[in-house]
Structures are given as structure tokens and as C-alpha cells.
Length: 332
Image 1 (spheres, rainbow, N blue to C red):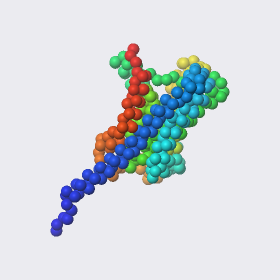
Image 2 (cartoon, one colour):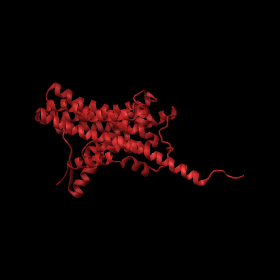
Image 3 (cartoon, rainbow, N blue to C red):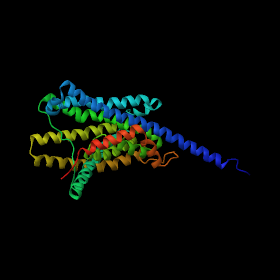
Image 4 (cartoon, rainbow, N blue to C red):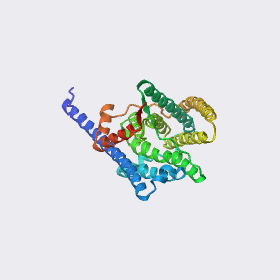
């Protein structure tokens, strides 16, 4: 019995399918790069607006006004660009708005302490890397300090900009617009790429490293629980924790704040470890997969990554973001 399949035809079909995969990834990468370029442009426009309107000094020096204006800038420079790109995704728009109910409410409940534990791991890894480069090479990584406001309205704006707005806006942009359309090409691939972009957008190595590590965890937990609300909640609680610790440094002694901080870290780790066991048990009971299957794609990870990254908007955006990040690097 003869096999009627022509090996050359089969090879040609495989090649064409690989090409189509790369073409689709290149399109998604171009849109993501365009979103990053708009993000950069809108930030520069915001600075220009502050200069023209005479609000620059108030924004940089008045703590009570900083976060009110900053909240608007965050929405304008992050939400608007990615919302515009979301519109361009057409048939993939629905996948980006995975803000429905999770697969299981208890699974989502267990995911939150796990996420907070990952955030603490991100803090320790970031601090270790910073100390290593400083001690070994005399290179200091810096990041903007949070300046706490003094008025009640300023305090409300502080929590709004640092905790509430980023949790919603950044999760929509990164885990939604960037990550969700990429899941077709592998969940792990989608998580890593979105975490890299999440890190780059933070503008300095300290926050970028932390954001990358946390981005991996948020992406995984959002996918395994079936809802991006998981990432929003974890993101909110982590930033809220940072706000509270920052405020405590203004009103109590450093020793007392350190005691509170490390007690919280111990609680986060203990609850995270327990909830990890409960998470696995619950997922198995409900037959919810927590391990990613090999994606039904033809291109290898390196080829997928290259197709997504190598486009003009993405390259320009990455070069600029690396440049802006380098401004927070100095020598002892």
C-alpha cells in the first residue's frame, strides 16, 4: 500500500503554517510596540502639559497635588494607549477582558496569599541584585522615592494613584491586552513576554526587576484561576502594603516600621506556603489544570519571541525604555 502524501508538499504546508504563525505574532508585537510608543509619547505630552500650564512646580514639589495629577497622568499614559490598541485587536478583544468569575472562588482566594508571597520574593531578589552590583561593581540602582502627602485629600490621591489605579489599569494593559492574545502561542510564552514588557514600563532597574518577577506570578495565577481579577486583587494589596509602610516611616521610628514589615513578611510567606498546598489540592479536586500543556504551535520559543519583538515600533520603544532606565543607574 502506497502513501499518497508527498513529503515536499507536507514540508511546504509546515513552512507556510510557521510563516503564518510568525506573521500573526509580528502583528501582535507591532501593536504592543505601538502601545509602548504611545505610552512614552503620552508621558512626554503630560510633562509638556505641566510646563505649559505652569503646574510643573506644584506637581514635583507639592505632595498633596502630586498624586492627584499623577492619577490622571497614569490613566492617560497607560490606559488610553492600551485601550486604543485593544480596539485594533478586533476579534481578539473579547479574550483581553477576562474579568469574569474565576473557575473556582476558593482557588482564587488561595491565589491571593500566594501572590503576596511572590511579591515578597520579588522584593528580596531585587534587593539582593542591587546589593550585589553595588558591592561587586560599585554600580548603584536607584528608583523614585514615594513622597507621602500631608492633607486628607492628598492622602486619598496617594492611595488612589499608587494602589487602586495601577491595579486596574496595568492589569488591563499587561495581563489583558498583551498577555491574553499571546496564550494561543503558549501560556508560558505569553506570561514571560508580558512580564518583560511589564518590567520595562517601570523605568528603573529596581522596579523593573521586581515587576518582571511579580509579572510572572500574576500571569500564572490569572491564567490558572481563570480571571484577571486575581491579578488585580494581588496587585492592589501589594501596592497598598507599600503605601502603608511608606506612611509608617513618616509617623513612627524606623525600628518600629522594620518590625512591622518583617512580621508582615513572615505572615505573607507562611500563608503563601499553606495556600500553595491548598491551591494545588483544590485545583486537583476541581480538575482545574495548573500545569501548562505544550502549545500546538510549530515555531520554537526563540522564533516566536523574535517574531514578536523584532518590529520597528517595539524596537524603538525598547531602546527608549532602556535609555530611560539607565538614567537611574550611577556609580559609587
